[in-house]
Each structure stands twice: as C-alpha cells, then as structure tokens.
Amino acid sequence: MADNKPTLHHLENSQSHLTLWLLEELGIEYTLTKHARVNGRSPSALTAVNPVGKSPTLVTPSGRVLTERSAIALWLINAYDEGAKFRLPSPNPAAGGNGNGNVNGGTEDDAVREEQLISFGGATLCPLLTVKLVLALLVKQAPFPIRPLPALVRYAVERVFLDAELAKLFGYLDAQLDVRGKEREWFLGTREPTRTDFSLMWYVDWAVQWKWIDLEKFPRLKAFHARCTARPAWQRALEKGNGYNVAFW
Amino acid sequence: MADNKPTLHHLENSQSHLTLWLLEELGIEYTLTKHARVNGRSPSALTAVNPVGKSPTLVTPSGRVLTERSAIALWLINAYDEGAKFRLPSPNPAAGGNGNGNVNGGTEDDAVREEQLISFGGATLCPLLTVKLVLALLVKQAPFPIRPLPALVRYAVERVFLDAELAKLFGYLDAQLDVRGKEREWFLGTREPTRTDFSLMWYVDWAVQWKWIDLEKFPRLKAFHARCTARPAWQRALEKGNGYNVAFW
Image (cartoon, rainbow over all chains, first blue to last red):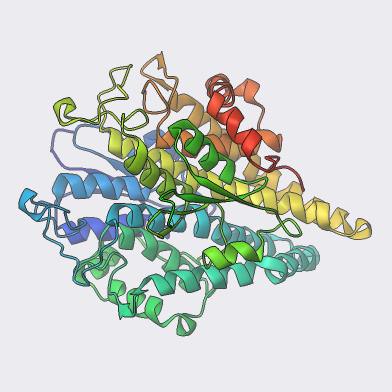
C-alpha cells in the first residue's frame, strides 16, 4: 500500500468490532473499509479480499492479508504497540517490552496461559455458541407453519447438554478473573488489556447480546464486560463502524 | 508430582490422541492416565482434574493443570524440545532454537502465520465441525419414530450453508500447503511438524473419520494426513491409548 497504513475490512454486526476496538486502543492511523451483510451473510466483496470471505481481514501496508482476530491482534501489537502497553509483561524487564506490568504479581508462565485462554475462547466456547446460533436461526428462519419442528429440536439440544455446558464454560471464564483470591481486571493480571482480553470479550459480548447468559450469575465477567465497554476506544470504534448488533437476525 | 514427569489425562476416542502423538514425538517419559467415556461423554473423573472436565488435560511436574491442545503443545515443546526439532525456525539462528529449518525458505512472519492457522482450526473450522457433529448425533440418537424430524433439520442446515462452507474452509487449508507454487510437507514449511500441524491434523482427521470430507478433493491435505498417520510416533500413540475412533457414536 502506498500510504503505509493497514486496512481493516470491517463487517457490520460482527466480531470485527473487536479488531476496530484494538485499532482505536493503539491510536494509529488506518484505513477502514466497511462492508454490509447480504442476506445476513458476509458479502462477496470480502471474498475478493480473502478466499474464505471472513471479517475481520487486515491488509498490512506491505500487502499481507491477515484473517483470524487473534493473529491480527498479534501482528498489530507487534507492529504498533511501541510502548508495550498491551503486551504481556516481559520475563526480562531490562530487555524492554515491560510497559504492561502484571499488577497482581502472577507467577505463571503467561504465554502458556495466554494460549490456553485464547484457545478456550476459540476452540471450546465458540463451537458451542455457534451451535446456539444455528439453532436460533433455524427457528427464526423456518416458515411459520413448520416452526415448531426446529423449535423442538432446539429445545432438546439446549436441554440435553448445551445450556448446562455453556453455563459451566462461562463459570470457568469468570473464575479466571479471580486467581488465588485476587480479582483481576484483565485475564493476564495486567494493567491494560492484552490480546487475551480483546479475544475473549467477543465471546462474552456475543452471548450477552443474544441474552444467552445472564451476567448477574457471573459477577467478574460482568465487571470485565463493563470495563471493556466503558473504554473510550470501544466507544470510538462504535462511532466509526457501521453498526454492532450481533443479535440482529 | 514426585516423579518429575508430566501426566496426560487422556480420553478414548477424542482429540487427546493428538497430544499423545506429540508426547511420543518428543520421546519423553510421561504418565498416561486413560479415561473412558460415559454415555459418550467425558467422565466425572476428568472434572476432578480440571473444572470443565476436558481432555486432553496435562498436569505438569510442578502440578500446573493445562487444558487446550495448543497450549499443552506450547508448554511441552518449550519444556522438552531441547533440539528445537518441532519449533518454529528462530529469526536469529545464532540465538538457538533453529533445529527445524524452513526448508521452503518462506519469508513470512511465521509466528503470525502460526497464530492464524491455529486460530483458523479452532475458531473457524471447529465451530462448523461441531454443528455437523451435533446434527449427526441428533439424528442418531432420536427415537426411531421421530427420526425424520431431526433428519430434515440436518438436511436443511447442511444444504443451506454448512456443507458448502466446510468445503470452502478445507479448500483454504489445502491451499495453505501450497505456498507460492511450492508444496509444503508441513504448514509452516518446516522439516518436521510444528504445533500448527499437531493442531490442524485433528480437524482434518475428525472430518475424515466421519466421512464429512473426501480427501480426494484435497490432494495436499490427503498427503498431509498420510504423512501424519505414517509417523512411528502416531502409531505408538495408537498402541498406548485406549482407542481412537472419533466416529464411534
């Protein structure tokens, strides 16, 4: 790219908002290309940018096309977070990268904890939320006369395992903000959010917007959610985007 | 743990096999605790090890409890891969960690590519495979007289979006083994498999065992799959485990 800025291909009412939030937190210049959904789905214009048509997609100044939020966040923080505000504390402060101290003095191997939490969001929580979404859309999109049919299927799946499993997983996540009796503001015990927080907030907010979870039952997640949405960068991302209502269907 | 070995809590017929495979590749000593499914689900004995009852779970010699395959692999490779056989090539060979050269001479930022591919498996592919699984189980487990009902729901979901989407995603993965016209043996262009390969092989093998994809349509994935299953460590893992038939339902 001639202008030396990254370009975010942003889709309305999607997890792309979380990447927009990170861009605003970093306070860098970027090009925002907004896409609207077509029949609720990702438009073909996004397929032209990356073959699976996913959003967010970030095109770096050198033309590299990145998908997957956690990879985009890794690249952005590596490239632009000069003050190391959003990075993990370095094991060796003298070597730099220590702008975001672990205020709770955790002793874990933070890189492994980061991987565990990000993978928990993507590979454990997300599949069940996706099942929940597919079942909800099945009912909503079925022609009225046959709607009781998918409604019965949804009821069975949610009753037999899905809702109890989701409550367990969100309970686990809630407990991750309370490590050894100390409440943490952010999942890695840092002063400012890290990639783990930008990643996990999506799953929490997705479930909140659909009313699949009641945050009153998860007080630490409730505080985390409020902490994220109160940040000026979150608000700026809302203003710059083209809508962020993920339960729009 | 007194014996200074990690313990793998292994569940039959599950993705835990992939972690067992990595342990065998590393050639280290470990304790293998085998768990059987109860009514097809993870047993309560696993919940006693970690609160979400997931397998694989690895307990480190210092007693740290790790879940999520990609995090377990990160910890194991950091802790035991002294020859750096399964690591990413270091950007600075003089600093060590360069045992697994990039034989294709790729120039990408490999850590970001690793994150992108592992996240693609967990957060993009896995949710759709999970929907596929839930729909299949719905049909299999419905009482015979009402079975046409979930069968119709499954047909609708697969026809409307699921099967085409899965074909697109596996096509994307197949293309990742052919970067700039050169076929790669492993996803990061290394001589030996890395965390990315141990991670992605699960999604490929899961879909193959259920016959959800036809590898003849994805020749590079077919070669990748054969390359993994032909490794002596894969075979040893099969012998040491308690069964690995993930389409057992």
